[in-house]
Length: 371
Image (cartoon, rainbow, N blue to C red):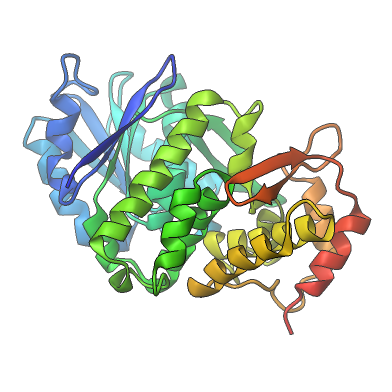
């Protein structure tokens, strides 16, 4: 079962290929074009983390070397706390050691952290070389690998340092999810639920009909294919209409505004990104209900899906509300000193507003504080 989705950006269109065992075909797919995405014989730098590379590195490298690429590797520690400029320096050092040139490329084999860092390193090496995304987590498959947002965290906020740099190709192998820890699978489901709320009613309803969504083994092949194709198509549709987030693309940040603040406030050690997004979506849903933007029944449907996925809906204990409010004002989505929120009007219908005040937000945060 192979699906191909095109991200139809005028200057840099590219494909998303979703297919079982696609790791074994990456080299062929890079060269199987009238104009190869990366010419055979060029140097490629594969960036990964130790766990993912141990599972899938050899297969990926063999598929690349079989068609003549010269492959080097850069293995970085796993985890959001390593998403820093220091890690970018290590990728640049590996690029220098491998003598990467303008026609070379980097290949990101890993989750969202590896994908973001590899994309940013590629954007800044020799003023920009190609990057290929091979996501291995559900979150990276449906979100981080698509759209060209790359970057690292600043000590004062998430993803404050970065660049837009679109990949040449995104290759998704659903089978790699079999080795994904259950917690990371749930994290990816947060982004899937997000697409249902902001864009795709059919996807949302398909998730509602599932008996369990908290582990890979309970999600059948057909539902998984629906999750991947619908989520990737939603991201592709939005990015094609607004590549640099000047308008519509901001809706992809649903759940991320307060979510990013929670991640920062807890030092990226208590909740992972998907868990933070779930907390952020819960808070956005409660805020929209309190302000009468959407009916409570719609909020309850969203809450039921988050609960079915066994994602958190409370802010971690001992997180200071005033710290969160301060972090919101330092978010990269702030414009003219105002925090932009994405709030729902209905399932598959959201809007962007900068009219939220601390007095609006504070009681919602207080209601969500964990015991």
